[in-house]
Image (cartoon, rainbow, N blue to C red; front, side, top):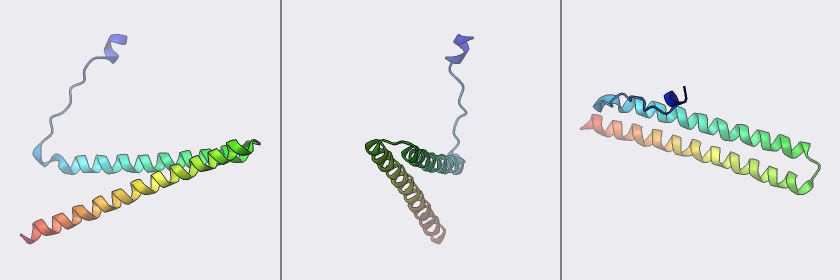
Length: 95
């Protein structure tokens, strides 16, 4: 049974026109990442409220802020990529 876990899996070959599916998968991954960071921030805030140690509480609040800023940065980069992709499509249609 252990042998089966390490066997190589066949991957489907990518076709030339398959970029749209790849882009969609990337966007889904980014959404999952932003949700992950936001959930981690919520957990850190909850733990900060639950602990009686002031220094640990401060560190957890800082961690929550870092998670939120990471989620915001991912969201901004996703938005910029989406906008640049639309601009490129418009240029291609004009030609």
